[in-house]
Amino acid sequence: MFAIQKKKSVVLSEQQLVDCDSNNEGCNILSNKFRYVKDEGVVSQAEYPYVAEEHDQCLLSEGSYKINDFKEIDGDEEVMADFVFTNGPLSLFLYKSGVFDPSAEDCQQHSVGSHAVAIVGYGTLDGKKYWLIKNSWGNK
Image 1 (cartoon, one colour):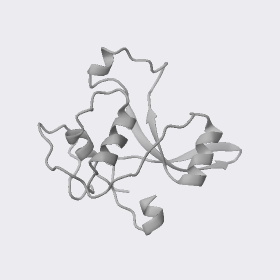
Image 2 (cartoon, rainbow, N blue to C red):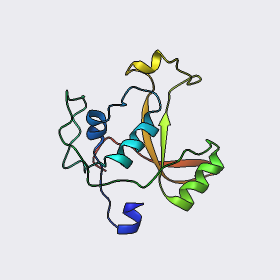
Image 3 (cartoon, rainbow, N blue to C red):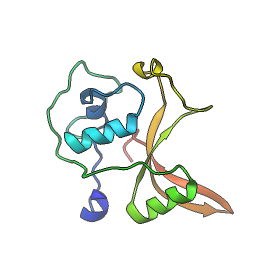
Image 4 (cartoon, one colour):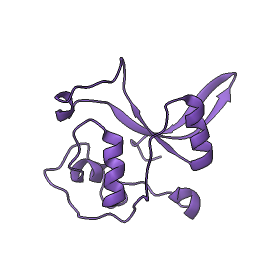
């Protein structure tokens, strides 16, 4: 929403979320991250670059960018498309196979789950529906 309202895109620091969020234990990963951004804020990736490993400690205390609130929506494709059209980007947690139903013990391990991305749009090409996804990797 910031990019839409300010007409300026800011790449936020994934590394800050890895290093500074104490609820980084694999389950409820998106809601934990959004709660952190709401309460503490996050800085830009330029200020806290991604290094693909967790630091032993958080390298700063508070971020410049915060959110007012967040909510979970139904995973139905039409509900998701309507949300993106009405509100803007939608975060999505990807899991590679099977039913994602980890035990409480599994949630204590960092290996549970997979990867989060942002759905920034959608469309149809040659009769096939698709999502436009922004990944956290790379510079574009």
